[in-house]
Image 1 (cartoon, rainbow, N blue to C red):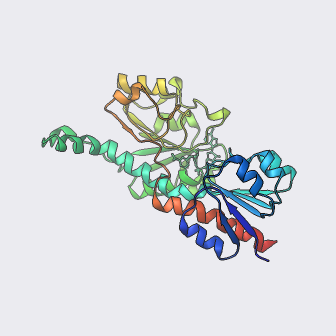
Image 2 (image 1 turned 90 degrees about the vertical axis):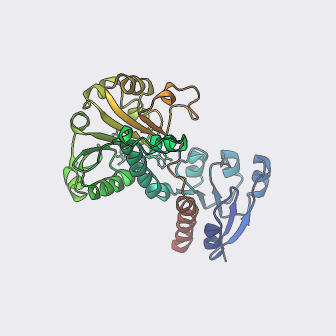
Image 3 (image 1 turned 180 degrees about the horizontal axis):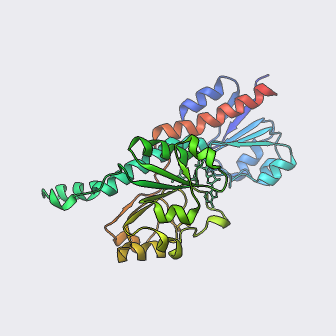
Length: 304
Ligand code: NAD
């Protein structure tokens, strides 16, 4: 018998097609928590994005074997309740790896070559060639803090640009780093030596404000910080002050302590490229977020 899947947040049609290949699929969008609760009995799998909360109540009322969260976080799934009922939980954090990686490279080049300013100036009818002299990536040292999925992919692209790579990650060895043409370094050493520091770490207690005033002081004058990971891993006040004083040369920010960062003084600085949390915003990543989870669910039922 085919497994029955309830999908309560919109997935990409490509993912729905994959699901229909092995399961009975019910798309059940835009319903209240009470309606989800009364609908859930009898389904083997539930797929959500960030809209639906798979609460303890929903989980306890269900016959679920597996819950799929299309995307990165799992904060809308009650993991304790799922564990108590022996329900497997899967998500698809790998779906946006390439989207984030390419954004790092694109935004960094935008900052270093003043593309955003040049575009604005042209639209104002100007032709300011000498004002926008920039810098190259070639031969520079990139410090990657967090050498997981995204960190490694960024390292690979940066190598193609002729950069030297330093990697800091408490969970990798020197040999792991070497395999990716990177040199393993302690955080302070990396900060002292890198021309550009890019962060690819989760926001947890140990990483909150990891880059604070003291760490920024260690950095080279005119160095650049890229944060397309999570708001809060860089102390925004310290970053703002260092950018304003000219200690740092620039920053790329896709994530903020508060999103949107209303009234943040960072928005008044010229040497910052700002984006509204666009890391995972590609068509491909959106398709992947659904299909990766659906494929994990398919494998789960196959193995059963
Ligand atoms: P990952 O789990 O593959 O890698 C994270 C790495 O950080 C791990 O290797 C881990 O060992 C390391 N790490 C943990 N604590 C550390 C510390 N104190 N110092 C240095 N390294 C530490 O995750 P990933 O898929 O590479 O994602 C990285 C980050 O990017 C995550 O925070 C994720 O939420 C974020 N992200 C942002 C967007 C966006 O839209 N801006 C999209 C996707 C992912």
